[in-house]
Image (cartoon, rainbow, N blue to C red; front, top):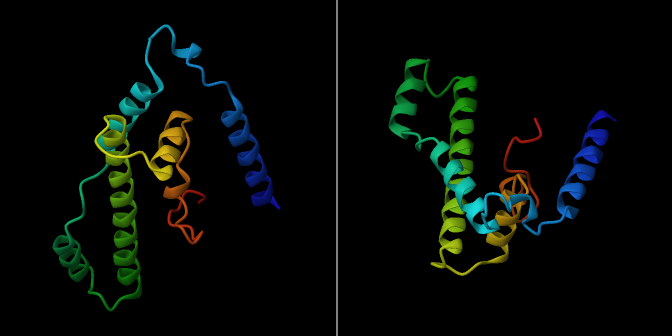
Length: 141
């Protein structure tokens, strides 16, 4: 029941954010366009993304912790691999946003959704669920 209420509250807040006027009047003192705001935030997010994991180092550390036959070590390695996939996806999408704003690539519906989500200070849908609707991140936990 608690999770249902959280989903309802999140849906309500999301609707409120999406229906707010986006005419730029709240940014008139700074004079920044939507694209400039999104580009700055995107660059900030890119700067915060960790470096890719060194698979050899991870394997060595798991061997030090008892090897790959221990269930907890198997779980750890799988979680590191999943986390790396999320990092790769986010990094790719953020670079696509910057390229689209600069006119280097075509703005696809996916990129447009990510731009709008960043502008609304929300997590883009494509970072939470894949095309099949399966959850790919741990945002809800």
